[in-house]
Figure (cartoon, rainbow, N blue to C red):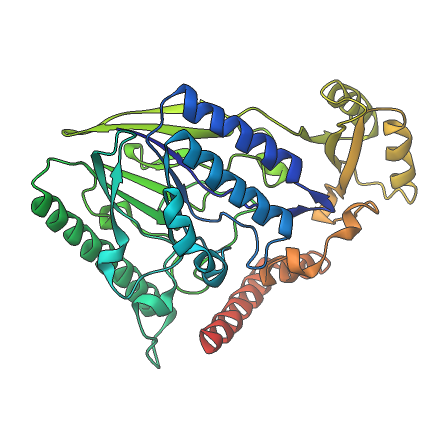
Length: 406
């Protein structure tokens, strides 16, 4: 059986005043072609299908288009809820989509048997059993206990997630025995694992509770398809535990990454192999850094990747200690007439951040509470000990507020 593993699409993302609609449309078109060319039996999207709980209408249209076009290829689709996804939004069309070869698991199920699914091959025969585990919210698997320290909360949540994985895996084994078929078992997840390398667009999930889930706590599945981390990577150097990463760069620090989806081949014995399919770049994002002289050459070089109808999106980081009141004007003169658009202008000195007018379109709903806090702290001259104390205190307050609304 051949499975395509992908995650973190973030349909509807609003990126510094820019829509990603055209990129996502191009990616879906490309993906459908890969499904046909490589005879994919099933596609797994391991969370964060949407960027927000209330995605714009065009994002929902892309979502529906994907379901219909994949159904027409004879390929089944499994979609798991992520921390960005609304359980209600994913769940509302779930019964209807089941008639279009699509299974949606928005959240942890009360009946864990619903999280054990048989993935069929294109010919309709069983190809694998999957432990369909979405993003696990703490309230789904545990109850907060008064008086617990931060470390005790972390251990409690880690243990609860471990038990959930084991319980679903045992049900998968039981289902395999009942079917009397030597099927491989695949698991999914949407979380941070120990040693995973993240990027600035990845938000912290378990504030004040769980930093990372150890790989030893996963069940012995033949393959574990993970989402949440946007950088494609093996976990702990293990071939069978993988993040596919996001299909498009979701922040400037992802601009240099080669995005990919993963072809996972399994048979009765287990995992046969994993092949990365590089995703084309549908919109050029470039981050340039240097003093004014270096920037002029870097911007000229970046402009070679753009064209008038699709300019390169630029992040410009200016090095140097001199404060230039006309910095924005100077950068604009460098880019005049070139197929580039500056979305963010930053000063490297002291991490002080200045933004062009385009970047000023950024709104609070695009920022986490920690983004806001960190940006405020960047404006202060504080010693490291005091900064660490303030950071710890702020995280504790946010954690207690989130528990109160859970």
